[in-house]
Image 1 (tube, rainbow, N blue to C red):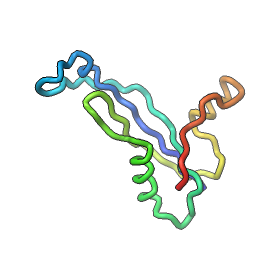
Image 2 (image 1 turned 180 degrees about the vertical axis):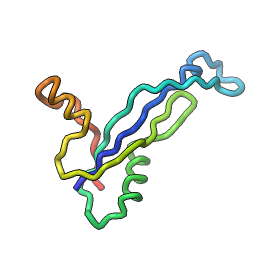
Image 3 (image 1 turned 120 degrees about the horizontal axis):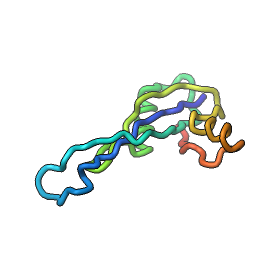
Image 4 (image 1 turned 60 degrees about the vertical axis):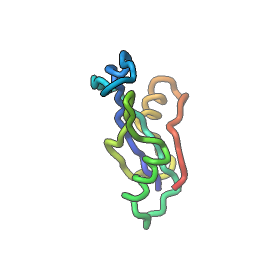
Length: 104
């Protein structure tokens, strides 16, 4: 089994003109997101803990300039393609940019 995680990526456009003094201006724009995969998941695993650990390992987080956070996750069969990979198969006939993967 594997877990596919989907994120939202946002960029703070207000930070582009920030001089680093005082509070950073806030003007967040959604920039899409990414799919990530946790492979070799044991069916008896604590899935919530695995997803939380994966977020840390993939580097989800926030700064003054950008943030990426989890919006969804789903358990699938081993080897199933992510949404991004399925789109690439449809558009190019092959996966040109595979989603990042880690082992559980």
